[in-house]
Length: 303
Image 1: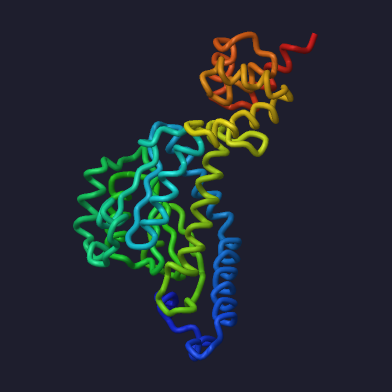
Image 2: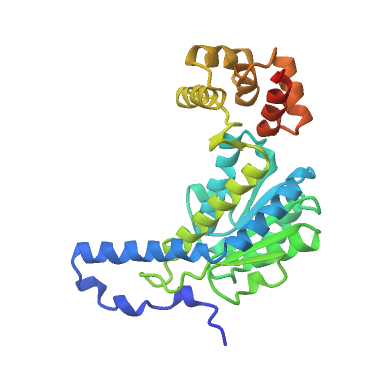
């Protein structure tokens, strides 16, 4: 029978860790982190399937919804908050349903993890429906809040993705895509913020970045939909426009000013589009895809 609690078992190689010197302890902890990252490689096909579900939901007007409790909730919250800033997506398209709500950012307590009834109410309150894609994350894969929440989301017709760190975990049953990050025992037994959490963070980073790419927010290795709302990001926007258009910094700055700081139309303007209306229309015709808009502009420019 599969051990559903491998993340809770004691690591056999560290039974006398309190006697080790600092360097050996840190080396063991780093080894655990490396193994956690390696565990993600095995699930690349499943992550691609999950991204496909998420992109489909977002393209149909739905949301990507993260559902989690405890440490996975903190990791999920970070991902959901960063996507709009990095890729210019409306914040309401990336939602979170977290055991204990946003109060977990001030005090992380265990009790809400056990409240499946509250998860069902939270899913209903969030208005989860058939247009949405819900990604549920749990190290054990048996957290009552996460199990009940995912079941409620599935009953509401949402596309579902389950991420767990134990093979055979109940959370994986019935999900449209099940992702097993098999990180095994922690260096400190049960401390799943370590190896399991690292694997979850890496997996969510990969998932959300692939989603952003397929939504047209990445071009030539640049984040072309970023919100340039501070000095660092305004400087980054200028570098992006110069890199992608080949224009000098002065021309790129003029293009950004004409586009009110929006990178995609600024790239088109710096690449020779006649005015902001033409650049905006070109992007609209191609669903915001800069690569296709630039291809069209190049074709028009050819005599």
